[in-house]
Image (cartoon, rainbow, N blue to C red):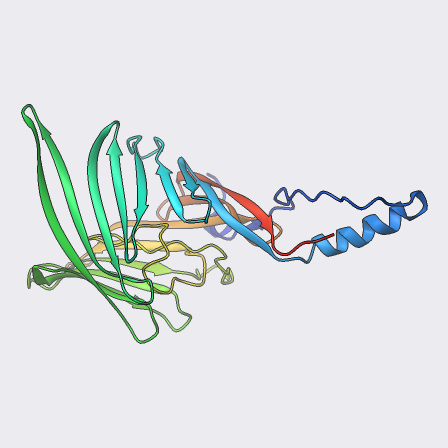
Length: 293
């Protein structure tokens, strides 16, 4: 790329393409009122509430149950070489289980225990390792704590409290840092998130926020069970080793939004030379709420 990074990072545009929303009119319209009726309908459909449901992000496809709960996430092979697999979700009264398959074999199971507010307070993870005679499993448990604002505060190894992730949020309600603490050695790794960059690029509302990352047991990106999410679109993420402060990665993000302000494309660039890392397209199922014509 020959343009400066400032132009790259600031190049967030509003795409003038509307998501397809089907609206069938059942009431006959007199010929002399066609134009007026069309205008009235256009005015209504441009202001009625819409519900967006994410169905695809990059190589990942999401499917849902009839009641709207997540049913299946199918991975594709992306530019980082992630393998093609899928996750199936099952539900109980106070739990959700995510089962990951590699081909036809179970690769991992995570069961999330939910509190009275529907937030995950504990998870049990079972990893499968296949050997000629069958498979062996390893188990681990994590506990989750939230601050007084309902945001994720820590994710800790249940069997070793000195092994945990700490989550920090800024005054805008956005995740600012995730810090990894390891076995009493103090902080060893940190991700820092920025939502404004020095190009004058404004804060952008995240209208479909996903869950933050992490190190011990990263929250499932799509399940709404890990407290309040960030309010704005992430523009930059930096990972560094601690206490050396050595930068391990430093990338920035540019977005394309549709007319309703939802992300339709996200591009990731390196901060050093603005090299494109990957481009992810976003697809949604868009339905109207309470429309009756």
